[in-house]
Image (cartoon, rainbow, N blue to C red; front, top):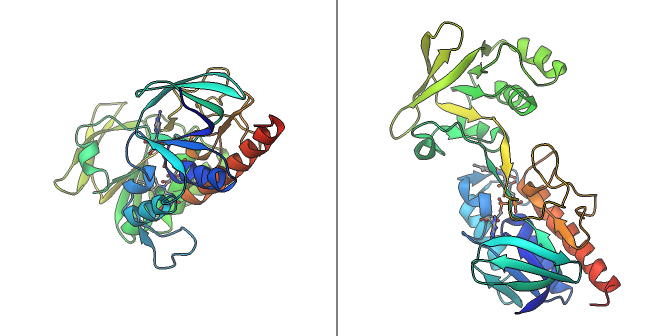
Length: 307
Ligand SMILES: Cc1cc2nc3c(=O)[nH]c(=O)nc-3n(C[C@H](O)[C@H](O)[C@H](O)COP(=O)(O)OP(=O)(O)OC[C@H]3O[C@@H](n4cnc5c(N)ncnc54)[C@H](O)[C@@H]3O)c2cc1C
């Protein structure tokens, strides 16, 4: 079995940055990516908020640039799916679809996926009206009507952000009351272009190839209503890609890995970086920062282990 100083799981912004910093510190690194390097960056058309690109950059271009940064460096790449981590600092064994791999430290940078509504056409309309990120995509709907679905802090915060951009915003929530903080609720109720559609669920997404409207259904009397919107922003939660991480690593109530400021999880030798960890702001710039910090922390531990 091959053994590396560090195994990095996931080649999104966090994992690529972690691998870059580790290999530049002279460490042997294996970087696992079961899909395509770049992670969620590939899911967005244009990235307008990554510093250094004032005119914006296509998601695929940024992903390519991240990946190109590793070219010529001695990072071992694997397309295997990591399915488990066992052992302890200095002697981990990763179970992968290509067989076991040894690593003295592990950086978990496997990202997160948005919880979907589970409606027909949702995958097809993703990027064609259906979005899961207001900061990322809100500007594409400037001056247009949109709907937001959800009732927690994310839905309220993102609605406040979107209300300044769009012409009209329907905030659809399945309950009578929001779960989000009162301060956000007060501010939402004061927005003149926000209409609350409470005790209602989104029943269907209409439009081909682009979203044209959504049908909502009242949970009180079963009546339906069609909202003509160009965008639907879904904030019904996110899910961490952390199923393969040992249960001993502490999670928050959403299942995200809890770390300290140096990206250490509660299991020595296992670090977490990017969207998979419990944090406030899930963006490319913070994922890359986490990756650098995790790499430095892993490097320090390797020094302590005299590895
Ligand atoms: C539609 C959309 C638009 C966005 N727009 C913006 C934007 O404009 N600006 C911005 O800053 N952020 C944006 N984001 C958020 C940003 O993409 C994420 O915050 C960032 O990609 C997180 O990076 P990461 O490395 O933590 O995880 P990810 O990018 O999710 O990468 C994780 C990688 O790990 C791999 N992986 C997972 N599990 C395993 C495993 N078991 N074995 C092997 N590989 C595994 C995955 O295949 C994936 O490639 C957007 C997100 C979406 C979905």
